[in-house]
Length: 101
Image (tube, helix red, strand yellow):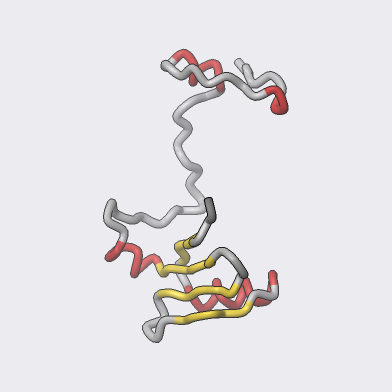
């Protein structure tokens, strides 16, 4: 299996491209003339940026940007709570005990 694409949804394409150029020395491979999509040259896996505005019109299941000031909802308090609700997932040994109650 080969990972072909990773797309990051960003509020500002220009800022995202500049950041990845400066921080990781990546080169831009493609920037859409409308400024809502760009790709970076990364080698084997395409790294794309899609603007929030474009995502709202093309993501089939709907798109809502993440608010960095609002933490995501916690569905489970810990692995014990997860199991109580019907999961049979067992912790892997390299993670040690994950039964924080």
